[in-house]
Image (cartoon, rainbow, N blue to C red; front, side, top):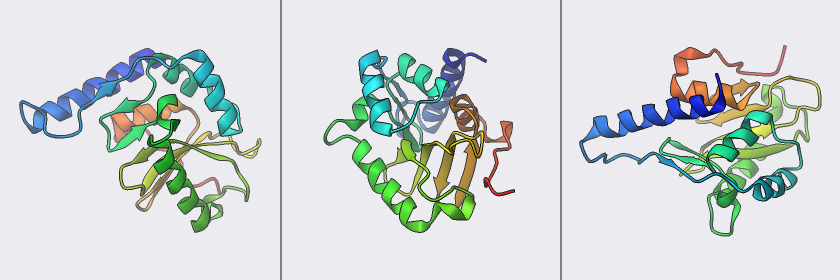
Length: 172
């Protein structure tokens, strides 16, 4: 499935969920942001210290982040001063202190936040396992640990958690 279709599915599910709560939608409101500028994506990729997975790059070319989930899917604008990128970095430091090696990540594995919740207790990281694993995304927090190969798999899981059986560890 193409990224545009996957994002459409996810947003449609968010809108249904929002309106199911009340006709005016008292929960988080789904928001599709304008696409990120290609130069901003390149700068964010450099900031991450690793190459972006193709699906995440394509996601940013469609919408510069996505609001309305319990997790904010971060875009380039979130890394501006005062943005949610700061919260994501705080969560990253917490995760590094808790020892990501317990789920099979090698010490020093680059972790770049691509999603975070408002209370900094759950997030999704782009990982560069340097050839030791095909997985590029790690969802962790609140007792969860899920690994995904592609960003499209993350979106599919957000849309329907029963649709995927992500890995819970990189350990054999």
